[in-house]
Image (cartoon, rainbow, N blue to C red; front, side, top):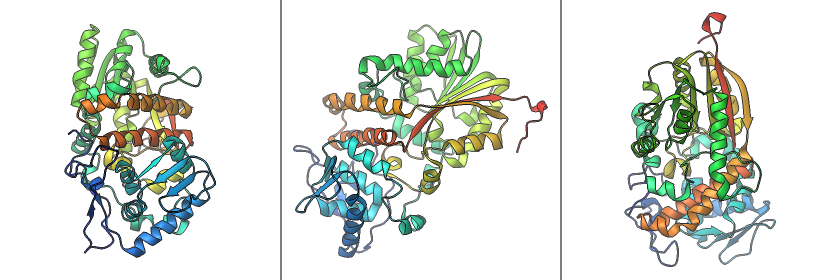
Length: 446
């Protein structure tokens, strides 16, 4: 069985009753599949919470949901909420035990275990994302540092930590990603001409996004281009087709191997070099740097290092085009130290920055100066919808690759959760242009 996380995945906060053993779940996540305890230890085991903890959790959940435009149906009780998309909690005891013990990590694990579902998962999660700042009472928000789980130390984005973190997501399987991505194998937001988007327009929309970034960086014949974060090579191929000489860096072996294969097939070996290399280890000087949705994997601790590394690779007068997912600054500050479901099961070590954090870091630590910023979050919502629908349609093929039902629910939740963030406006995505100033012109440095 292939899983996103091995059994050694870090646990969330400890159970409230140190003498109470967890209840192993022998039920099913659908009509036929059981939860594999070896592959999914924290999904198969429902934490045993005290009656007081369960009662307090149930009251807090009811308080949070009661005033929202949705319906929450708990088995054996009346619906709560103001009406809207339905959240159907099939096992309230397990649901409350998980949330009471592991917070929002438990909320996601409860979905993976099949203890709750939603008639329209994206719509329900969009409501929750739109009220993220209000779901937890203000007094508990102020005490977040006491109850919220912290990031595991071994997931810090040091050079070794980054390699491990990136591998856990991007080295799952090239075949898996190919099932739900379009033929460009581009795993970042597209830019559409209009909505609603359709699958047959996705590849063109991905090329439109790439071309906008290459235009921002003024990439053309003879440009020396450094790409931080290769993906599966589409941007490097498109830049080389313009006549650029591209050095592209990745920490994923599977991405590196397939990107190199695509470069060979395109006959662009002399123009494109794909290297297994950390951004901190990059060498050489370039006319342009492009980095697409890679900063989210850097971590706040290393944002200054990241921007300085890119600045040092650029010649004076050079241009850097950056695509980044962003979140509101106050929410970033409130949640930046919290270990979440996304960290545990999807992107270990990740942190989505705010626009303020990006711009202030570049200003304080580099000679890069912001020249332009464009937001297009609605395009990401549509990109994610197309990926999610494709993933759902091809569930049998996902299973054939050895990914079990829990993994498929995990991936469905991840795509829906992400789409909901953009639909609610909780998340956004930006394209930035930074220019490299001449230090002799008086640009301050730290």
